[in-house]
Length: 196
Image (cartoon, rainbow, N blue to C red; front, side, top):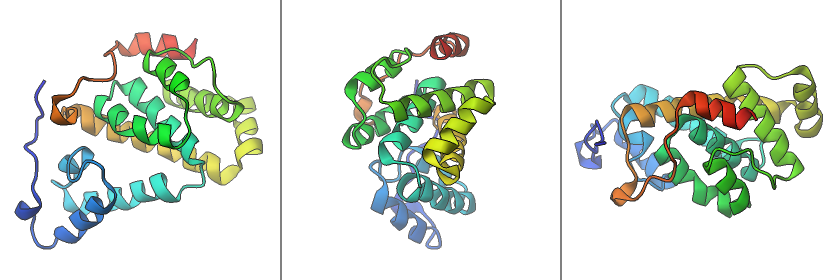
């Protein structure tokens, strides 16, 4: 599988877009690669997406460990190789255990989740795979995390569906030709396994 878009370079960007590229370069571990390579083809949208992602990654009311767990859940659901690759290290640094990540990576409900991780897992899986959250789960999430964090988590989940789609549509590969971290699975199989 080869990437569908050539890598955009800083020098090739119009002068009006370079301030956005400068902002991206301050926070992106992939420089102008990853999703930014595609987003920069639509500069006005890229600016809005960058500002939105900046909030969801660095200013959200959701705990960093849980935030990164939610991103990995979306990567697993979508078979989004680059997204998993980019966020696994960040999640580990934020305190998400290797055991939880390995189970999720293998499309198994993690068996060693902490209580708050279980809540985020159940919430994100229900929201993403059933497009709804049962009343009892919603009430537990709000009681445990607060309304703002639940809204932030919901928007994060949806936003990383968009990021997954963008990465998959443009076939962004692992830098340096590294091995893909996820076994590509049929969406129905993923659904059955993660809802189990």
